[in-house]
Length: 102
Image 1 (tube, rainbow, N blue to C red):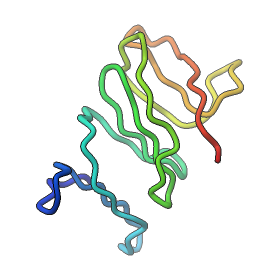
Image 2 (tube, one colour):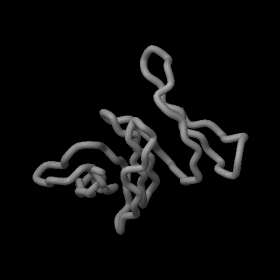
Image 3 (cartoon, rainbow, N blue to C red):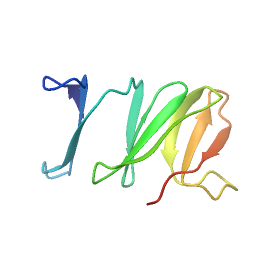
């Protein structure tokens, strides 16, 4: 869940919960997102030309921009690409985006 942040200078706060209602993590952020998703053990925030990926410890694993317009971000490996995340261009064509596994 993403809420407005009433504390500090970051305008948003990301809250991730388990299905039993217990909190996994929360994190304040300033990123101007237009969409978000949880895919496996990754939280994906994105807009039309960039994305941020967090693991379930709240650690940022990827922060990058693209030279194409993004319509959706997902975890996993697009067909034929040995990378960590997939980004779909508005045309629907998948691109591979390498993430930081450390």
